[in-house]
Image (tube, rainbow over all chains, first blue to last red):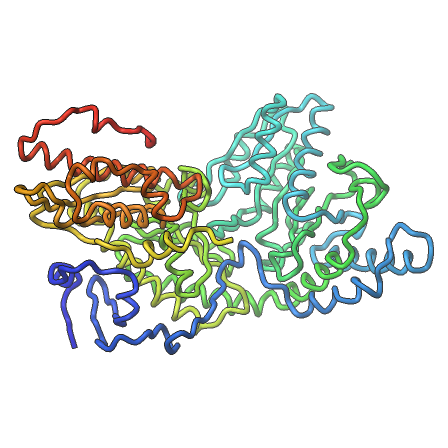
Length: 446
Length: 141
């Protein structure tokens, strides 16, 4: 049994140490100390034996595994009920019935009327259509100002960039260190020529929930259209369009165990939607193209299931998330990002100083853990996540971010493995990091 | 298709020559934390033969930054200083069986880190040199 401080271990070890050594010799890390608890070179991570690798999927904010319910619901629509809902014959009309049934079911899940639901290819299309509609309708009345927040999804921000080039003025509200938009800021930002306010219900990277009701009330007072990208929220927290008081709301099925490539836009009665896709008369002339009926039915089944188990799932998932938050608290110079009081049950975002996110992510992957990072290297640019930067997190810290997003399919055993692996990987990456060396010496980083 | 080649993953998960040399003859550090990568190279040089007897690195950065550092140190260990100065980022990329286009700057950083360490060795030992050979490629702001 060996027992020495990590720094001393580093000194003693004249040979280079690498990542696999950390796994070949199981270590226990308490604070800054590393204890080699076994000198036998056996592969042992968690309760697994050599060669066994468990896959732990904690990237549910990226996408989810389809539920059995959704999968089974879709199956008959491939080969049995394959008609085109626009066809007049009985096969087509049978498909049409299921299409309208699915519309009614998803409408019920969010407190909308079936006639207010427009099926789309997903959240991005719904965001694009909502924003471009409000911009177009506003421009007809001479209103060319749009308000959003600094940490929206790119489906929103890039659509706004396009509108900016077309002469719209865009105001992006601050989200502060807590990752939450303030209603008083919105009040101040609204102008006579504001055509649209679009603020996400919950942020995809940090999981903070926005005060949608408060924001929509501000918009109502001023007669401004309010859209919310609820892609991360629907199926995870209670979402009711009437309670929210929103005019438009975007949803994506694959975030709540539904199929990919399908979603919908809620558009309140009275707002005239503009087409993104022109052609046939589908979706009451507002979205051309033969309906993706298998996916639409799968989405309806998944959403009903998610909404019916919402409280139960939220309780279970938030316990896993909280265990992670408590479990990383002993890692020095780490932080959990965003206000935890207004938070999605399953998403947690943290930063570890002195390490870079992609390395962290790929070493977690080596241990079977699938997570996500807002580091520059995972975004394909030199800048780390705009979400973390908008919350005032320093660039160098934002490089070392990790997002874990849980679902009801995750287990406590998996959380234990994640915590054990994070501790090992963070110590390892810091042991080879010149940035961490500087931080430890108290030197200021450029 | 995997994100990285087998060679990159090998050098990333089992990096060679990781560590520090306390009594190094030359130390070079390049990059900055804001851009997301910093490399620090330590050289131990035999002053009689000019052979790089030992080389170690510490790197903050993504998988390809760590793999580039590891591969670069492998390519110069046991080589004369002159060979280390000839090391190009292209040679590092080739040895790593390629890097994704957006990661090529990691190999440039490895080349520059080694050059910086050699320059430090030259400066400390009063070796005269042409400053042109240490001109940076300026890929990082």
